[in-house]
Length: 527
Ligand code: TYD
Ligand code: MG
Image (cartoon, rainbow, N blue to C red; front, top):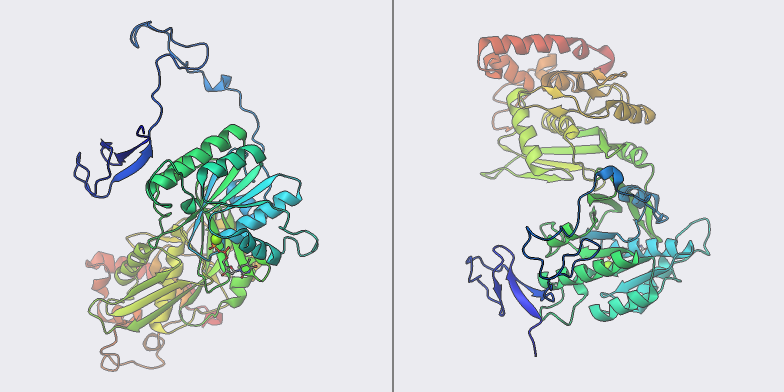
């Protein structure tokens, strides 16, 4: 029997008939991936009028196979999009599913990928489109049981997902046949890791198999204009399982994330050929499936504790402002290397903010465990969150809640302790005002009625009541606080003004800045 597959090293391209643990070419480990042998291209197989006459000689002699054209001459048909019936998903996709496109939906098990894709096909089928749900993971009965629970439209109980045709199958070749004969407009493959091509010897889910499955489905989808959603699992470290290669292949990579124990789920685009990658959609897992969360800010603001360590952040989720609560806990550590635990934020960002807080805010956390959490299982991935993290940690370490009326904040921290401008301040301020948050602490030039501050130190002064020693209420003796890993800003300031900047000019500069923030500190209402 002729050989149909070959093992190719994904690093150096070495080809071998057999699988090796170590590539004989470049000696890298575990890089050989099984691939289907492509039929050899024969000379002169080029399409179109530019075809090279056989025997016309080398590349220099014959006419080129294809000619470049100015972009203006390229005819571009307006892109048709199918609404998925789920507003948040449409927005993340950039306005709906594009026919012939491949969308990879990743997420950890149990997060709701099957639920979401079931609902999408339910909506599309209800709106008169042909759909197909391919399940390699669950039996048709299991898919039906889920579909029975789904509520597509609370207003109209007659709309169900039960009309969606389902195919429980693992074999790629028979799935391709069904796809070709049924010619659905939208198709879900749940999941790409469970399908297997008989032409390759690897197990389902191996890199070679996943790549082959995706490539073959893509070829058919592009030829027939089928919009395909490939469901993929995510490995422990968050990468879409096995194949990062898939991310290059597909048009759009969506990530579905959240904590399984909490109801909130967030959908983000990591890559999108047909829209922005900044958008995020928020869902809640309920009894009848996933429900879009349209008033997320209102919920998070209402749930905010306003205790010490709690700060409301006016964040941007793509083009949309979102108010979220950032909570921090600072506790003396018994470990040599204190813990830095963060959820919903970048861990390195926390390290940076803690360093800036220590150096420029006088809040040292070197001997303390620091925990920071964005409440609700939401992930904030923008520099505008720095100030909220800094204020939450400072508030937690001092044990003092933010002073004054309920307020929000945003802004990026620079390494020299300055507060930097971030995008869309007006939308953030509007959102805060809409939910009753006044005196938003913001970087300079944010406009509106923001409480603008230029430095972290000013922000701390504006946000937090003065410490007991500072306010003269109780002179906390150094011995009383000995052993505490947490230093009060006031203590630091009283003890060594020079330590702020090292040089006398820096210290006086810092004092001037503090004086500038004085007006806010003296605010009687705020105390
Ligand atoms: P599922 O879509 O199967 O997750 P995935 O395909 O990503 O592995 O959904 C997982 C969870 O969602 C499951 O634990 C039950 C819950 N769920 C609900 O709470 N309500 C519902 O209506 C449905 C369908 C599921
Ligand atoms: Mg599933």
